[in-house]
Amino acid sequence: MKLGFLVDLDLCIGCKACEVACKSENDVPLGAWRLRVKYVDFGTFPDVKRTFTPMRCNQCENAPCAKSCPVTALHMLDNGIVNIDKDRCIGCAACVMACPYGALYMDPETNTADKCTFCAHRVEGGLEPACVVVCPTGANIFGDLDDPRSKISVYKNQHADTRVRKPEKGTEPKHFYTGGGDVHLDPNASVREEGFSLFNYIGKLEKIGGH
Image (cartoon, rainbow, N blue to C red; front, side, top):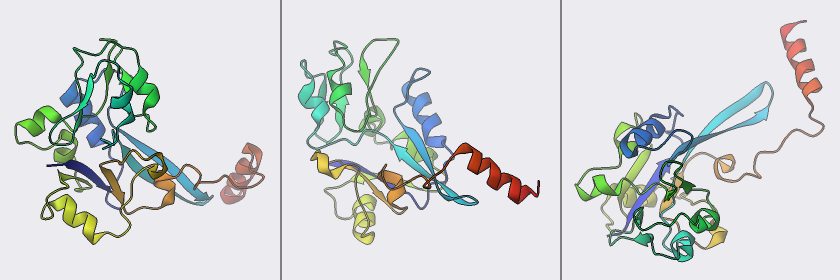
């Protein structure tokens, strides 16, 4: 078994129910996030759009966080989840610095590292991650990548545009995205209008408002 995650960006409406469910299920402290929904505005005013991208630990097959941990607090379970043993963690933050996705944080209450674990405690009991359960549009898809009949495997095969974040890092993420556009995952895909300034923006607003 190799558990993975896929987000259909065409279905995500940015409601952030997944964020709230994650914090509640895992007792994530204020100011910290295991899962966050990033938004990007793109286009030229007044023809602009806002996109939403749920971002969590990528559960990398070649996980740099686990390699950097000096006490093996970060380790891979038999089902492919990169789990964290907070009792073993010494709070050195090496994993936080090693992760190219910014997926780890230091828990201010325990001074130990933490991150998304695909709700490993729920999965162990035969349940889906909390974020999957609460998603009103079914944008979050979770399952066994080794099973060709699983929903996530079928979804991947049916969507040729399935991709991962920062493939050039060679981490082999088990978290995939489909749908949407380049602005969701490529920070360089959204560019600011040449010569843009706040004064130009205000001028456009005034023209539209007839002032």
